Image (cartoon, rainbow, N blue to C red; front, side, top):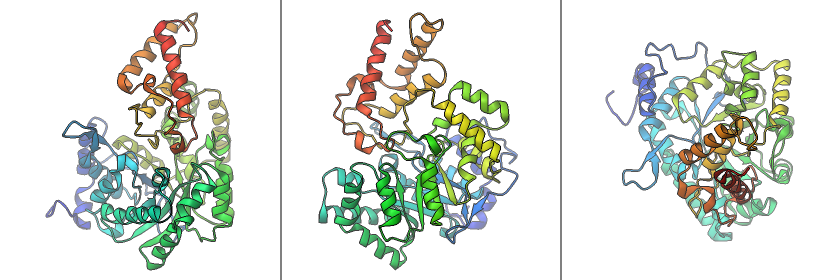
Length: 460
């Protein structure tokens, strides 16, 4: 390779096979699961969808969960750029060409890390999607001209961070959360940023314009029916649980997808795994899925579900580790669409999952950082993990109470440092407006803290 910063198409295709895969696993600390003879690669070609005039891979790379490592100064974390480079190289050589990021992802580091990795490759070999993420600016109190100017600065920073002079796909981010219609109007119209972005599209610096949605369905309906904007695509949360069992303020995906399909607006899918929840289901659900398809991963069922809808342009997955990327490549290279019987089977599975009282956390980290230091996602994920694994102590009279009690408490201390546990929550509620799943986070922190204290005192 002549230039370490830039890879020609010929050199890239020559070296990016096994070499990049092994490097990627090494960077991620995983060298034990990848064959060195190239047999890890899927046998078929990646399924593609041409719904917008672009030949887009059905598997899209969600850049919200890039690998992180401790910062050199010991303060916080930084993106592991070597690992990101290896994952991007491997994805591109296996025909993944859609990369979705946003200014807040990875503590504000995702766009730059994504830009560094992608800019080593020809610009016409991938599509970049990023977002107008001015919800936090609005939440910080900016209005009118101040919000407009800060939003425009965010937009220009995205070009710099992603090392590009145009965006293939650009979105108004996370519309519907917070104060719903009022907040949407404030973020887009009252400050004039919608007009600014539409002019940028006319100039060609934005090729396709869309929005991502969570929350108040009135916002979704307004955007489609009354905004007057000819949307090129819309990003929605869709998976086999949310199809008819969406929680909190989220809307059933059956409705969202149906409204887009009847308007012939392509859907980009986020949260096909519900932040990993559909790959970490209750042991009873695992057994049910494995009984039908022993060779398939639990996660593959969710990805097949999301990809089986014909109006889906791409399905985003935040693939932190090489084995996640490889498994998803196998699912989509090519996609084997669900049969009607398999679709019904997954709906039965979703109904069964509703019997297990997990907290609907997607590990998106929008609630972070907590001003009082709590690691909110880690707390909720540990709680859910114990439910799914059957290690949830209920009563001192249960046969497995001692074992479950120890597993919960030991795992809690290992997963969440003591200074970041629930007992440090003061209930300020600053996290709640940012949660796309509409979780009442202080209420859950109080409930889990009460549960932990009772466990410690052994008085359940």
